[in-house]
View 1 (tube, rainbow, N blue to C red):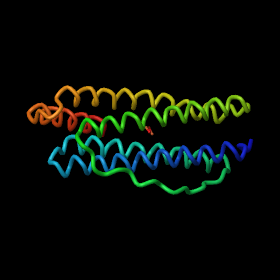
View 2: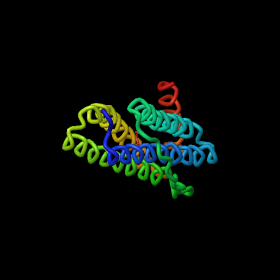
View 3: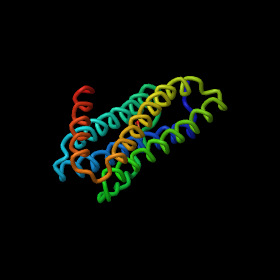
View 4: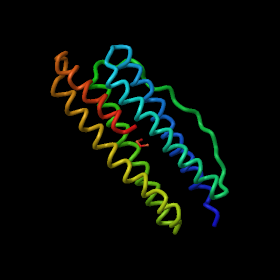
Length: 167
Ligand code: OFO
């Protein structure tokens, strides 16, 4: 069954949000690498790769359903963060925004009786739950240490371990 054009467009928009997240986390990785906090750098690099995979999952779904891929412009993410805390704050806010967009689309798919799309979207709902929890965790931890350098270096080590674990 063909997916209605409106939903195809929404799926393309989700794909664009995932690509933006890929780009955003790449910028965040560079923010940390440039400050010799390579553990956090590796963490965001890993997240960035995952976001690209999320975009590709949408791409393959569109292809499988014989739907059109519509490339959309990717916004340029902000580059200069005030602190590691503000970086995680922004990441956490973005994840919540993405979650909401998946909720809205899932509701629309259900209302239109597009159950295959709905089933496909559930994977993203679960993934967003994990990602929100992850960013919230790091936001809390970095807020605890604020500009205490020793604390930050310890967290950096922990972030590196986390990034390796997910390889
Ligand atoms: Fe793609 O998982 Fe977050 O945004």
